[in-house]
Image 1 (cartoon, one colour):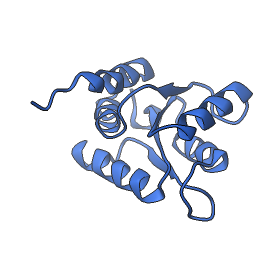
Image 2 (cartoon, rainbow, N blue to C red):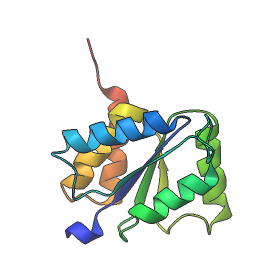
Image 3 (cartoon, rainbow, N blue to C red):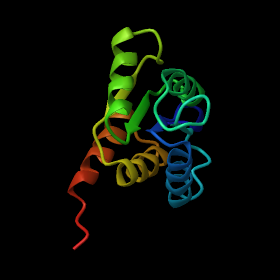
Image 4 (tube, rainbow, N blue to C red):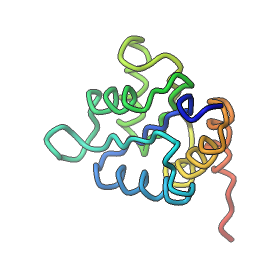
Length: 136
């Protein structure tokens, strides 16, 4: 897959700082992640805690390169907001998927896998597999 057809990744958190930090970490661990479009969508438009359908839709549009968009969320209303956007059908790019994965580990797995040129199904599987990562 060419660099211009990479899977895009959107990281949705209740906090803009958390979303941006996880995006930076994932890109760094993927060798700089320059070939993978990753966008944080954290907080609300006014900088508060929460989720914003407008920020999520803008982030998804920004990372869409035609190979699909994987959306990872932190919790609660972030999941509900993405589900609502997907149900509406016209707010997110075609091929956008909500990925059920741990936020940090899943984001890293998704970005590393996308950097290797994998398709959306493989990026989703890698992120979801992060649930099985053991620390002890």
